[in-house]
Length: 209
Image (cartoon, rainbow, N blue to C red):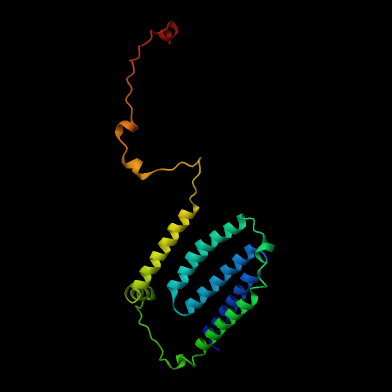
Protein backbone atom coordinates (compact mmCIF):
# COMPACT_ATOMS: atom_id res chain seq x y z
CA UNK A 1 0.00 0.00 0.00
CA UNK A 2 1.32 3.40 -0.97
CA UNK A 3 1.74 6.16 1.59
CA UNK A 4 -0.77 8.31 -0.31
CA UNK A 5 -3.39 5.56 -0.14
CA UNK A 6 -2.73 5.11 3.58
CA UNK A 7 -3.27 8.84 4.17
CA UNK A 8 -6.53 8.68 2.20
CA UNK A 9 -7.92 5.92 4.40
CA UNK A 10 -6.83 7.73 7.58
CA UNK A 11 -8.43 11.02 6.53
CA UNK A 12 -11.57 9.25 5.29
CA UNK A 13 -11.99 7.26 8.51
CA UNK A 14 -11.50 10.35 10.66
CA UNK A 15 -14.00 12.29 8.52
CA UNK A 16 -16.67 9.60 8.88
CA UNK A 17 -16.04 9.32 12.63
CA UNK A 18 -16.22 13.09 13.13
CA UNK A 19 -19.40 13.34 11.04
CA UNK A 20 -21.07 10.63 13.13
CA UNK A 21 -20.04 12.39 16.33
CA UNK A 22 -21.55 15.65 15.06
CA UNK A 23 -25.04 14.13 15.08
CA UNK A 24 -24.59 11.88 18.12
CA UNK A 25 -22.78 14.22 20.55
CA UNK A 26 -24.99 15.35 23.44
CA UNK A 27 -23.15 18.64 23.95
CA UNK A 28 -23.63 21.15 21.08
CA UNK A 29 -20.16 22.60 21.70
CA UNK A 30 -18.63 19.15 21.22
CA UNK A 31 -20.67 18.72 18.03
CA UNK A 32 -19.23 21.95 16.61
CA UNK A 33 -15.70 20.86 17.51
CA UNK A 34 -16.22 17.51 15.79
CA UNK A 35 -17.46 19.39 12.71
CA UNK A 36 -14.22 21.39 12.74
CA UNK A 37 -12.32 18.08 12.88
CA UNK A 38 -14.32 16.81 9.91
CA UNK A 39 -13.45 19.95 7.92
CA UNK A 40 -9.75 19.50 8.66
CA UNK A 41 -9.82 15.92 7.40
CA UNK A 42 -11.75 16.88 4.26
CA UNK A 43 -9.11 19.54 3.63
CA UNK A 44 -6.50 16.80 3.89
CA UNK A 45 -8.38 14.75 1.29
CA UNK A 46 -8.46 17.72 -1.06
CA UNK A 47 -4.73 18.18 -0.61
CA UNK A 48 -4.24 14.57 -1.70
CA UNK A 49 -6.32 15.38 -4.80
CA UNK A 50 -3.99 18.33 -5.55
CA UNK A 51 -6.78 20.84 -4.90
CA UNK A 52 -4.75 23.10 -2.65
CA UNK A 53 -6.94 26.16 -3.18
CA UNK A 54 -10.11 24.37 -2.04
CA UNK A 55 -8.31 22.92 0.98
CA UNK A 56 -6.94 26.28 2.11
CA UNK A 57 -10.27 28.01 1.44
CA UNK A 58 -12.04 25.40 3.57
CA UNK A 59 -9.61 25.96 6.44
CA UNK A 60 -9.57 29.76 6.30
CA UNK A 61 -13.24 30.43 5.50
CA UNK A 62 -15.17 27.67 7.22
CA UNK A 63 -12.89 26.63 10.07
CA UNK A 64 -11.31 30.04 10.66
CA UNK A 65 -14.45 32.17 10.37
CA UNK A 66 -17.79 30.36 10.09
CA UNK A 67 -17.21 27.58 12.61
CA UNK A 68 -15.61 29.94 15.14
CA UNK A 69 -18.74 32.09 14.88
CA UNK A 70 -20.94 29.01 15.32
CA UNK A 71 -18.89 27.98 18.34
CA UNK A 72 -19.29 31.34 20.08
CA UNK A 73 -23.01 31.45 19.28
CA UNK A 74 -23.58 27.95 20.64
CA UNK A 75 -21.58 28.73 23.77
CA UNK A 76 -23.53 31.94 24.43
CA UNK A 77 -26.99 30.48 23.77
CA UNK A 78 -28.80 28.56 26.46
CA UNK A 79 -29.83 25.55 24.35
CA UNK A 80 -32.24 23.01 25.76
CA UNK A 81 -30.50 19.80 24.71
CA UNK A 82 -33.38 17.51 25.63
CA UNK A 83 -35.79 19.50 23.50
CA UNK A 84 -33.42 19.44 20.52
CA UNK A 85 -33.03 15.65 20.72
CA UNK A 86 -36.75 14.90 20.98
CA UNK A 87 -37.21 14.09 17.29
CA UNK A 88 -33.87 12.31 16.84
CA UNK A 89 -35.08 8.71 17.06
CA UNK A 90 -38.25 9.37 15.07
CA UNK A 91 -36.21 10.74 12.14
CA UNK A 92 -33.53 8.05 12.42
CA UNK A 93 -35.02 5.62 9.82
CA UNK A 94 -35.27 8.33 7.15
CA UNK A 95 -31.77 9.59 7.98
CA UNK A 96 -30.39 6.05 7.82
CA UNK A 97 -32.03 5.51 4.42
CA UNK A 98 -30.57 8.73 2.99
CA UNK A 99 -27.16 7.93 4.49
CA UNK A 100 -27.25 4.42 3.01
CA UNK A 101 -28.03 5.82 -0.44
CA UNK A 102 -25.14 8.27 -0.18
CA UNK A 103 -22.75 5.49 0.88
CA UNK A 104 -23.90 3.33 -2.04
CA UNK A 105 -23.36 6.19 -4.50
CA UNK A 106 -19.87 6.88 -3.16
CA UNK A 107 -19.02 3.17 -3.31
CA UNK A 108 -20.07 3.04 -6.97
CA UNK A 109 -18.00 6.11 -7.80
CA UNK A 110 -14.90 4.97 -5.91
CA UNK A 111 -15.03 1.44 -7.30
CA UNK A 112 -14.65 2.79 -10.85
CA UNK A 113 -16.36 -0.15 -12.49
CA UNK A 114 -19.50 1.69 -13.56
CA UNK A 115 -17.86 4.93 -14.68
CA UNK A 116 -14.64 3.37 -15.92
CA UNK A 117 -12.40 5.52 -13.72
CA UNK A 118 -9.77 2.80 -13.48
CA UNK A 119 -9.27 2.84 -17.26
CA UNK A 120 -8.59 6.58 -17.48
CA UNK A 121 -5.03 7.53 -18.44
CA UNK A 122 -2.89 9.28 -15.83
CA UNK A 123 -3.25 13.05 -15.92
CA UNK A 124 0.23 14.58 -16.00
CA UNK A 125 0.28 18.25 -15.05
CA UNK A 126 2.98 20.70 -16.16
CA UNK A 127 5.27 22.35 -13.65
CA UNK A 128 3.64 25.78 -14.00
CA UNK A 129 0.07 24.43 -13.62
CA UNK A 130 -2.17 26.35 -11.21
CA UNK A 131 -5.38 24.73 -10.06
CA UNK A 132 -6.60 28.10 -8.75
CA UNK A 133 -6.31 29.61 -12.22
CA UNK A 134 -7.95 26.56 -13.79
CA UNK A 135 -10.81 26.66 -11.27
CA UNK A 136 -11.39 30.35 -11.99
CA UNK A 137 -11.34 29.73 -15.74
CA UNK A 138 -13.94 26.96 -15.54
CA UNK A 139 -16.06 28.86 -13.02
CA UNK A 140 -16.26 32.09 -15.02
CA UNK A 141 -16.56 30.50 -18.48
CA UNK A 142 -18.40 27.17 -18.43
CA UNK A 143 -20.37 27.87 -15.25
CA UNK A 144 -20.76 31.66 -15.48
CA UNK A 145 -24.58 31.65 -15.42
CA UNK A 146 -24.91 29.21 -12.47
CA UNK A 147 -22.34 31.31 -10.61
CA UNK A 148 -24.34 34.49 -11.20
CA UNK A 149 -27.58 32.77 -10.16
CA UNK A 150 -25.95 31.55 -6.95
CA UNK A 151 -24.71 35.10 -6.27
CA UNK A 152 -28.21 36.51 -6.71
CA UNK A 153 -29.67 33.85 -4.41
CA UNK A 154 -27.11 34.66 -1.71
CA UNK A 155 -27.83 38.39 -2.10
CA UNK A 156 -31.57 37.79 -1.70
CA UNK A 157 -30.89 35.63 1.37
CA UNK A 158 -28.78 38.39 2.95
CA UNK A 159 -31.46 41.02 2.29
CA UNK A 160 -34.16 38.71 3.67
CA UNK A 161 -32.14 38.02 6.82
CA UNK A 162 -31.61 41.74 7.42
CA UNK A 163 -35.29 42.54 6.85
CA UNK A 164 -36.39 39.76 9.20
CA UNK A 165 -34.22 41.10 11.99
CA UNK A 166 -35.50 44.67 11.62
CA UNK A 167 -38.31 45.38 14.04
CA UNK A 168 -40.00 48.72 14.52
CA UNK A 169 -39.67 49.84 18.11
CA UNK A 170 -40.35 53.14 19.73
CA UNK A 171 -36.91 53.45 21.27
CA UNK A 172 -35.07 52.72 18.01
CA UNK A 173 -33.50 55.65 16.17
CA UNK A 174 -33.71 55.25 12.40
CA UNK A 175 -32.11 57.34 9.67
CA UNK A 176 -34.01 58.01 6.45
CA UNK A 177 -32.09 58.59 3.25
CA UNK A 178 -34.66 61.08 1.92
CA UNK A 179 -34.30 63.28 5.01
CA UNK A 180 -30.51 63.21 4.69
CA UNK A 181 -30.62 64.24 1.02
CA UNK A 182 -33.11 67.07 1.63
CA UNK A 183 -31.10 68.60 4.48
CA UNK A 184 -29.92 72.22 4.15
CA UNK A 185 -27.05 74.10 5.73
CA UNK A 186 -29.34 76.38 7.74
CA UNK A 187 -30.93 73.31 9.33
CA UNK A 188 -27.57 72.02 10.56
CA UNK A 189 -25.71 75.23 11.48
CA UNK A 190 -26.77 78.32 13.44
CA UNK A 191 -24.75 81.53 13.66
CA UNK A 192 -24.82 83.18 17.08
CA UNK A 193 -23.65 86.76 17.68
CA UNK A 194 -21.96 87.28 21.02
CA UNK A 195 -20.97 90.53 22.67
CA UNK A 196 -17.21 91.17 22.86
CA UNK A 197 -15.60 90.37 26.18
CA UNK A 198 -14.43 93.29 28.34
CA UNK A 199 -11.00 92.97 29.89
CA UNK A 200 -11.08 93.28 33.67
CA UNK A 201 -8.51 95.53 35.39
CA UNK A 202 -5.59 93.68 36.88
CA UNK A 203 -5.49 93.35 40.66
CA UNK A 204 -2.62 94.35 42.84
CA UNK A 205 -1.56 90.76 43.39
CA UNK A 206 -1.54 90.28 39.65
CA UNK A 207 0.61 93.32 39.17
CA UNK A 208 3.06 92.16 41.82
CA UNK A 209 3.27 88.73 40.22
